[in-house]
Length: 213
Ligand SMILES: Cc1cc2nc3c(=O)[nH]c(=O)nc-3n(C[C@H](O)[C@H](O)[C@H](O)COP(=O)(O)O)c2cc1C
Image: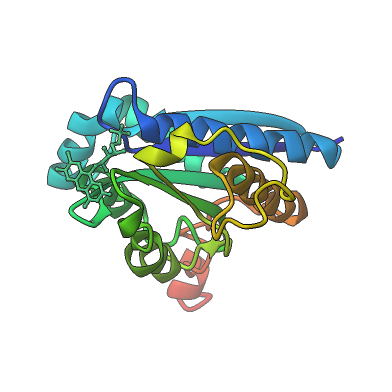
């Protein structure tokens, strides 16, 4: 039975945070499916709020230290990521983008990623597809097609069977979470995790540089 590590990043600012709630539900759905596929699962959660000052320090100095450096190390070695941001002014929050900006640009290459967002209105649900997804696509992450947007009203829906909801255009939040978790679990289960790219892999040896002399 092989282990899979899922790293959850929540950029919510409120306490309690609806982004954290969505992140936890997505992690739960993903872990259940991975266990059903025969894996043991380790879920690590990174609350960006706790690292906000360190993230700005990293932007100013160019390198991270301490707990933030440890969090980034765990993230880059994960088998799958769940990234959840609140929508601010119809896009990802500044804290979310700042965190993405301090990552090595190659560190998410091929990484299975499930995207989630929370917002006050369902009218902004497409922000996941016009702003968050392109950001992760640029970084060559393996972003799964299913993403989950939770507006304030979504938290009031209790769920129900697909048959009971057949007249709704959009499935209730619990069903969307389950579907997304299954999709991420399938990618994370199948992935051959080679770990983060070695930045020195293509460096010439001193012998080559000295012309084999
Ligand atoms: C400055 C600001 C801008 C916001 N802009 C939007 C927006 O454009 N669209 C939207 O749906 N919600 C917007 N919201 C609402 C938040 O996205 C929503 O409350 C979110 O769920 C908060 O997440 P949290 O509880 O994890 O902090 C905004 C909230 C703030 C504070």
